[in-house]
Length: 109
View (cartoon, rainbow, N blue to C red):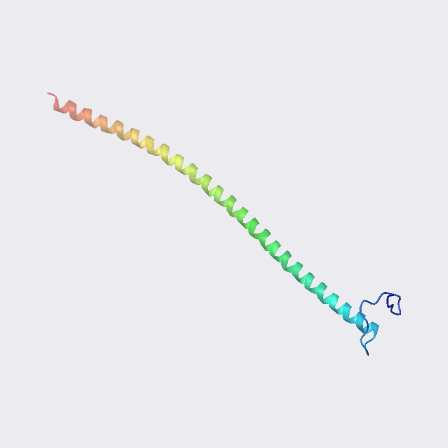
């Protein structure tokens, strides 16, 4: 047979002498509220960590986009410099050939 309190609910632990059912219920309620408060605080910490992680991921994405744009610009400049380098090399070759031909024609009597 189960001990029932005045409200008809089963009493899981016998009331110590001098402690009423209401006091026991109040203590259990306080313990449950403490546990709930701890769980809520853990959840808030988890959510804060999750938000921080999301912010870091977003910042990394922005950095990646910025770096990709910089890389694209650098590649364009590099290709332009390569074209300019080839053009200058061709002009130098033509100038060297011209100088050689002038020197060669000046040596021949």
